[in-house]
Amino acid sequence: MSSAREQGYREHPSWLESFETAWVQIRRHRLRSALTALGVVIAVAGLMALAATMAGLEAGVNRAFKQIGSDLHQVGPNYRKVMAGKTVSALDDAQWRVLQTQPGLRWPVATMAVSAELQNRQGRPLVLQVKGVQGSWLQLYRQSLSEGRFILPSDVEAHQRVAVLSRPAAAALQLSAPWLAQTVVISGRRLRVIGILGDTDVSSEASWRAEVFVPLSLAREMSPKAQELDFAFAVQPAQDPGRVVQGLTQALRQSMQTPAGEESDFRIQSASDLQRTNRTIIAMVSSVLAVVVAISLLVGGIGIMNVMLVAVQERVQEIGLMRALGATQRCIRRQFLCEAGLLSLLGALLGTVIGIALGNSIVLLLPQAEFSLPPLWAVLLSLGTSLLVGLAAGALPAQRAAELDPVLALHQP
Image (cartoon, one colour):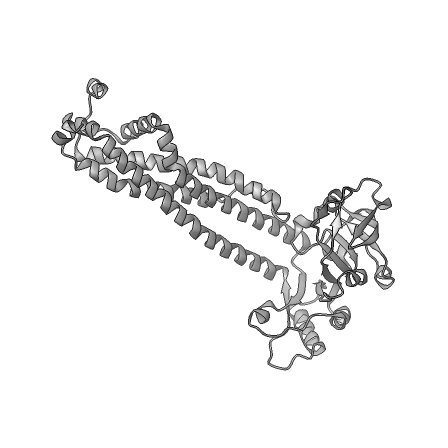
């Protein structure tokens, strides 16, 4: 109190001086200030982690589509029909034959996901994606081999027990050079490694690609109950993609004996369609999580308001002295608003740094994502929103402080 008298008090301090005084108060009560801003730190960190993760996912998927080109098309189950509770026939060998003979297509590929058990050299179980494949996979997805060869039609026909691995899969299986002299055990079957994909990490290029490839016929032996196929193809350069897809749709509907007027059991999507779907999914997930983060930020604002109300009660004599030295109600109100706003802003800055680090740590666990910073608008929005929340939370305590009677405040013990 004596220091306040010695320093004096300006009747109309500037905003900068009010922030300097607020900073002194925050440093004087470090622990309380840290706990007060904790809610804002958590909320903003969650928002930044979400933004960084979604940006990393989108960047990885965009890079994948840029590499494989816009002429890629995929044929899979019509999940909209499944969600409507309708029966959907699976794509099988009959449709694969139709696809292979359909004009205007190039590099047709048939794949089947396999539920398989793998172990590394130490006997630890691994979670790797295994996929049976038949067709021109390397050409369609623009991949190359660093060693060996890929799966040939003769491997499929002869049910050869062979496998092609991506480098991450080979590392997870603890295989060492020479790669082609190694064997891997999948679902109790010993397979000979015949090829290693190039330096490109297949799993980071697109979520539908596998890390372990086996002949389609062998995949059927491994998963006799799961015989559903997925197809992919590219359109010949001189062909109209829309007309080619329309012709293929009619041929597949006829093969599957789909009645006229009934929705198809399959869906053909281009690379652009898949990219738009991916963006829609990311936007939906981001919206839901953003609501959760907003609620957390509101809770953090309530925490700031509660602590500031307690601070008003603790600093009654200080407020009375400031009024006695000439401070107006407006100055008192501004002082407490600056403290609340600065607390919230500092919490938002710390939360931004933590959130970006956390988001990119999550990206490391997502094979199809890549390192990315959240968009600038997300950072500015979180900082601005946090500041507004802090000011709103400090409004009531600031008004309470401004309305204190200076005479009663000075005599309060």
